[in-house]
Length: 279
Image (tube, rainbow, N blue to C red):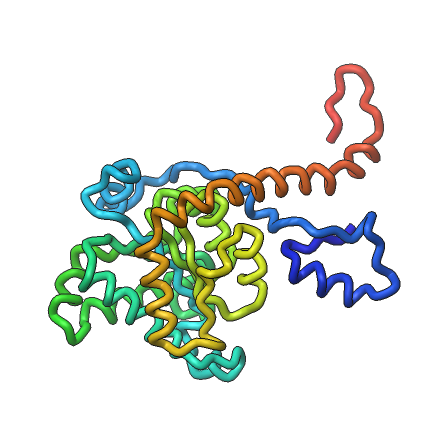
């Protein structure tokens, strides 16, 4: 079998296969990350983060924004501009939006890494988070500097995927550049936006009817990206309501898909003797 995780990818699959396309084996599904379970962190969250996430949605002193920065893009923006054909400045997209949040709202910002390579590695999300925090805390605007000290925190890179998904699921709104970080938000029913550098992100968001919340630096300018994210953030209540049904549908599709993939292996397993458990 071969599965595509969205309609756009399925068309690519069919084109690649040509006359070898077999509708019984080549199928359109969803990303299996929609089926990933959540688990509360086993290690305690740092004090400020635990406090911010403790209260239930709608009963918080201030809303929480989860934000994922891609170390791949952040650490070498000039090379990435050439590689992906960006019109927008990725660093400024991130910082402009977060500055606006700090100036014009009371929201707390939780920087959530996805690729957990250590600082110094070219893909390190924790390293990118450190750089974002440093930039906000040394901003030329005194309001931003003061708010950043109190309202910006970074999740340590010590949690597994289910724990990170749990953290994302507790956000009032989430924005990610890493596609699977955004799937953690979408599949949890969290209003989610993306700063995308690949067509794969739009395809995944379309499976949840959320393609309007994909901001693309390849076709939009920096200010447009900032404004698109701000509009998504401001519309988070309506997005949450609209996302509930497609998010649930995709979780069910992912489970059925996994069952279909596993079925041949189950059928091929030799029958166990009485009292034995198949490997």
